[in-house]
Image (cartoon, rainbow, N blue to C red; front, side):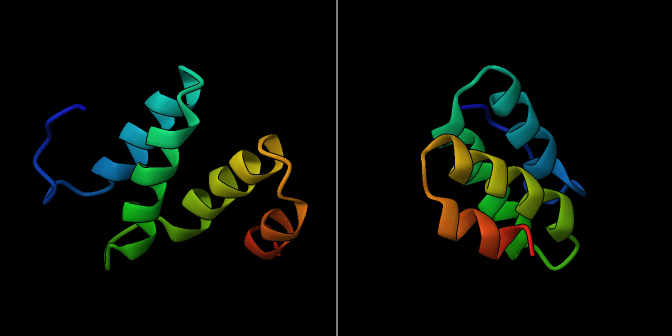
Length: 68
């Protein structure tokens, strides 16, 4: 796992995106969930990528909820 200062703005989003690009969807989802929980996070973008990951895993219902 990459070590980064969690206080940096949007760090979880950027790490999630890097994992997503590498097709490591488990780690990407973990980082996007952390971004959603952050008060300064980019929730809409994180939810978009989480919806994509849910679709890739065949969870259409969860994807629809995230992409609403």
